[in-house]
Length: 150
Image 1 (tube, one colour):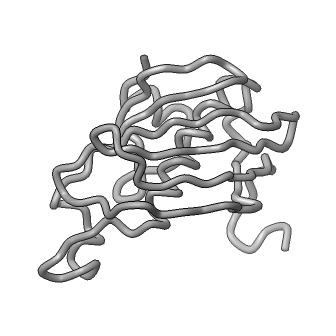
Image 2 (cartoon, one colour; image 1 turned 90 degrees about the vertical axis):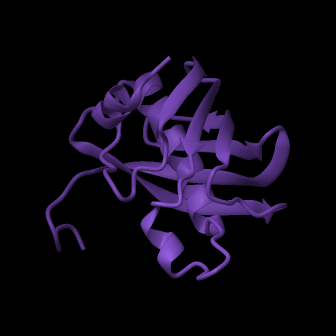
Image 3 (cartoon, helix red, strand yellow; image 1 turned 135 degrees about the vertical axis):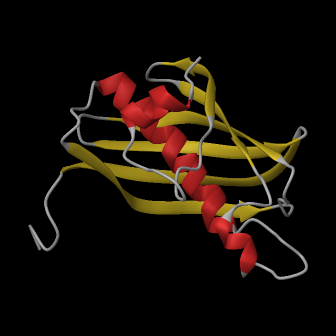
């Protein structure tokens, strides 16, 4: 439904931190399904872990957050000068490791959605097997330069 170019128009993340490759399904205000193709070329595999490359769990959560960001931005027509920041991660569980060559299927459903706040429930799967899940809360804020607004 959305390719990488459309995703990049909606969220500010770029290599090496863009962790969603495609959006497969989206119901505005309700749910989204995206994918992340995991390759051995990911920069974190150099140190996590040498000889046994495993995707860090926090990056699986970040991929969920980025897919959620696409959904929220499309649903609320959030202007480009706004950013979304994590406000909370609840009920996070990691069920199975994710390896190079895997494809993460990221599924999110909206729990709460307001003009400046969103909460989603996310699940990540590899070949139909649940590998991680969490509830993520985000807040929409004004973009400011380095050191601004502190």
